[in-house]
Length: 361
Image (cartoon, rainbow, N blue to C red; front, top):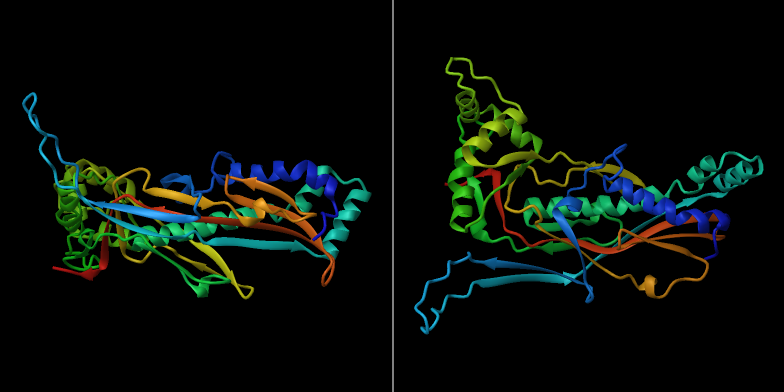
């Protein structure tokens, strides 16, 4: 590996460009906000050991007792703790500028094109390699949140598949009394009598229920949802309109104290130079969230951070993404931009999961 052909630009601007990309992708640049739930629902946590760990406490908070002065304290039962752990997987991607593209940049410099145009060409791959790490994090998080297991299969990943089981408790998983595609089904009652009842017994408060768009469409068309909204707006006539998300959420929040959030996220994956769009949220999954932060985005240091390669220009962005820029002349001259990270979403908070496609009495 050799230094960039345009090392003066790289040394002066690579850091600024890389951190600017992170600012935009984190949503702090209002001109182009990007929604990443793993950024808002997880807190970053550094792992010295290079392992991720999820701890689930199978119990509730028990009130203390009033005791007489000088008396002994009553011994309480200690809750059982379930733990899942494993090595933090590594991910990364690389893009390159070929000889023709490099020649074009040489021409732009020679003809004194505006520096902004030159920078745009030279660093065009930087947003893509950083965004690629975020996209994989988002994919893994949404798969894990909606199923309890983050599974990145070989079919959507160049390299090896990974599996991380967050050990969702069996007693926090439910089916439905009748498929919600039936307008006579009672999805709100299912949620109330199963999820909310269990959460209440656990001293938990369900704030948000995350679902995919087809599942919400089924809910809003049911007689139960239409009746709830009609009563909420004091419409006692024969016509009961189908409420949209905003309207149904107003009625549901008033009656039950939670709101629905639709997850309609597509992730573009590439394998063997073929791109496809996948939906990470499990079809029909209903995830009841009881906290703003549901876990951690756990990261570890990369070996290359401690052992940098000569000729490579590095930048660490967002604490855990190592971005590199360098050139090679095998098999032909090319300029490369790459990203690497050892990072994984780890869900540790209680999540109540309902499969709306499975009937369970």
